Length: 255
Image (cartoon, rainbow, N blue to C red; front, side):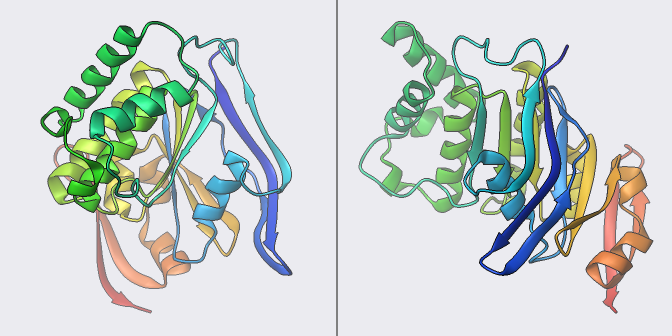
């Protein structure tokens, strides 16, 4: 049985202000990416933090599957925040190596170092390996954060707007890497994505949050519609499929 993340009837409030109302997600399965979209204030980031266990929420978050807890060099649920790692005097290589060790991976130091070097190469960060984090841009440090997450090999990876500080090229690169990570580790990926076209490109399924409830969920072609744009985002827009099968969203006016 493949590893699966279940989120059922999740509820949370800040003080007396309710944020999430009985949120149940479709199963988030290993090898797949589920994108969470919705307007500002709909509860997307709060949802991820509740799933990660940072907030005491009502409802249930659980993992099932024969591989739960059996990964010798990592495992568990890992949350990657929107903000990149802070500037510091440690190098990129050291930052990723520390993350791997914090993740509980056993083995020899040279094995860890080889894994970190391979991860940096895959992300195109090998040329920055000896650079200090304080010498990098925010976007470059965000890539380092992704490298830290990848090297810990989680069962479930929670990403809060992983492309928010990146240019167009690196956005597409990160999306490809996230899809590769989901398939190859394998990992169940739940990602908050602001850009709807990027969500359509990365996701096997999309969950639309609106005012703290699930408005709709399903494959991108079923969820991303002109009707949803009007009801949830209060905009007029069109959704079209390109020749290579990618959905594009064009917004024409506000409602």
